[in-house]
Length: 221
Image (tube, rainbow, N blue to C red):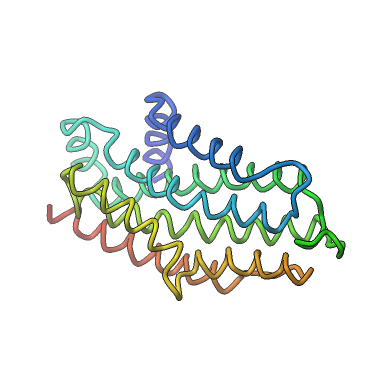
């Protein structure tokens, strides 16, 4: 499995197809995060913006290989393991991106409540922001796994489905991503630092289920 992960990571880096989502994420941060803003609000924005980027990274990894190369890898390692490696590399890339963003946002933001009256711990806010970013990265990975091959092969269907599902994952009641981001925003208003562990656990479970479905269908399609 480690060889498959290295292979998929090399494909992602060498293809340079990861640049557009990374640039998009940087643009999101540039628009929504400014130096001196309340830290929890800024971390909530950074976490929410990561979800569609994570979904996009899954699509990139799942479609990075030519059909012939993908067939050869599937024949050698098995289609389920080959697809699992694609999803895993995309998730790791999204997590790394979110971790870097969390550190930067925590460093440049003001460790206060939304009204700048209550001081909060920057370190604790950074941990809360990282947990929220992980929840959004996981749920974005689930969205990507369910809106690309083998479930949806046509870009005309897959791309709109990815965008719609990513939006719904951020706004629908009960979504782990919405719960994690809302916890940060609410904490900013009250001057308390949340610990969004439950949203992270829920997102991880949904991602595991979505990935299992996608990998199972890979061998059949």
